Amino acid sequence: MFKKKFDFNFFAGQLKIMLQSGLSLNRTLLIMAQQSRSEREAEIYSNLLKNIESGLTLASALKEEKIFKDLFIEIVRAGEKSGSLVSVLTSLEEYYKSKNELKKEIKKACFYPLTVIITLILAAFFIFKFILPVFVDLFAEFNGQLPFLTRILLSLSLGFNKHFILFLIFSIFIIFFSYYLYQNTKRDDLKSKLILKIPMISTIYRDLILCQIAVYLSLLLKSGLELITALKLLENIIHDYQYKNFIHETTLNISKGASIKECFGNSNYIPDIFYYFLMTGEETAKIDFMLKKAGDYYYSKLKTEIEKMLQYLEPLLITLTAIFVALLAAAVIMPMFQIYLII
Image (tube, rainbow, N blue to C red; front, side, top):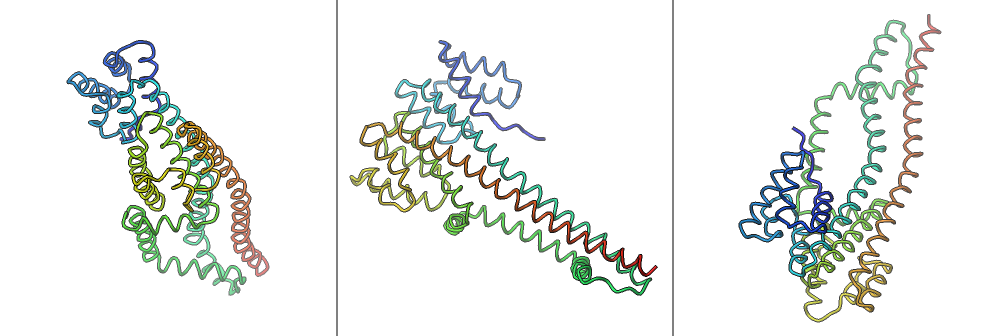
């Protein structure tokens, strides 16, 4: 059965509002459990309440529930220690809201091209499998010669039908092999290098990582965590191999006495605009604030880049679809016209 994903944005927002109104944490979780329409969410809130009543902090209770990531837990932990739980919950609510909006933009960008490509593949399969082979027997009755374009497509169709099982096995193998490579962490370095070299995609991918670095680091520092601790957590959160190594090296260098400005300034992975945001933040002692501004900048840039990519993809896919349809139409109509002449 389909299970709705846990809404971290809603959870942080509701928790923040109720705590702001003066309710205790225990009472807040009790109300959320009673009001929840989802049995799964109600169970999570009830478990949190039980663990807190047994003496655990909110962060420790969150850690007992597997759905909460280290980022959420450590920010809440830092907020509890500094007495700014409401403030960090506000930051988490804003973060998850922006994250959800960005996910929608990316899904929107992927939906159209994927739909067109899948439709073309299915159309080609149907025509090669069922439509074009009909013309072989049809023309045999009239001793007619198929047009050149039709002969090419028929050859493809006959080869496709003759080796259909092999084609199917090969397609399944490619899908599973691609999935295996994607899941295999041993080749993360290769995947990272490959993605960072693909035109257009690499720009969006790099800006997405930079946006994550800026937003995550801002959240961690704003919650009251030390820079070294925040960077260690950031290293575990970022998935890209190249940037993960960069953050690891940055953490080591800062622990030896270097400044974050120096580490980021000497790296090829950090563009100038990101560096200037960070440099300004360090000089004004407002690193968390300037990192948030950097995150906002890259979030806005990402949305623009996705829209621009769609502007390029739409006419390209329309043109390819038109060419595909025109070729198939010509391959089908020309034989029919020849049959008419023969009759």
